[in-house]
Amino acid sequence: MDIVYTLWLRSVKRYTRSKSRMVGSLGMPVFLLLVLGFGLNSVVAIPGMEQGYIGFIIPGIISMSVLFTSMFAGIEIIWDKQFGFLKETLVAPVSRLEIMLGQTFGGATTAVIQGLMIFVLSLLIGLEISSIPGFLIAIVFMMLIGISFTAFGIAIASRMEDMHGFQLIINFVIFPIFGLSGALFPIESLPGWVRYLALLDPLTYGVEGIRYGLLGSSHIDPAICFVILSGFTILMVGFGSYLFRKINI
Image (cartoon, rainbow, N blue to C red; front, side):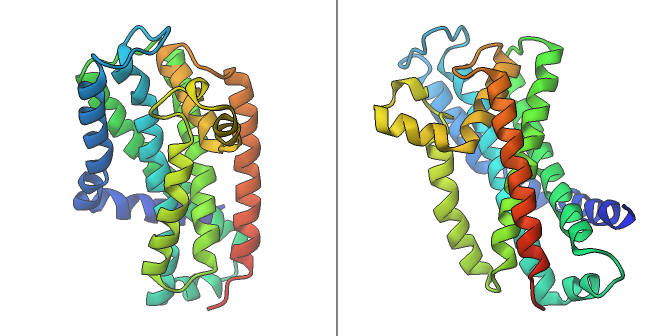
């Protein structure tokens, strides 16, 4: 497990030492939080939501921040390919599964940190969490989102050589996932066929789980959210490990 810890620590240190990356990653989530939250708070009413529309979208914005940071963690794989670090790692007497897990946990950790930064900003603008145990539940769902989508990003990066192409594909994949997750609107208000698509979106269950943890209410049973998102996480780790083992340098 030493290699897992070492690669995890490397990813975390690279993230914390890059202040521009930390601040830059906050741009879009903060923009949506302020513009949509304050702009529509007095216009949009969500049934059963005491904290208004801004309270409703905060879990969605936190999920968005975790999702984006997780998926783009795959860039590190391509970066390491181009600069030879990955080749040196792969020829070491360790399994590729350990290497992949180290990268995955490192990317997921930075994603959760990013989500917690949005959470702190949300507290400053008036978010009231339901309870401390609820906050811990939200952390668990952030971790599941981080691990699953980091593994997904690594799976895609394992089959690519071009960093710009990776970014284009990730953007193509990431926005439908976020848009259908119910982060910005209740899935119950969607037309029937779109609602089915939303229920096929794994991020939907992460958003609802975080919403339950922070606000105490959700449109989907949190136990169901946990089971489905956990299953998706295991599937993505397995899928990412399979493609990473086939990587060629």
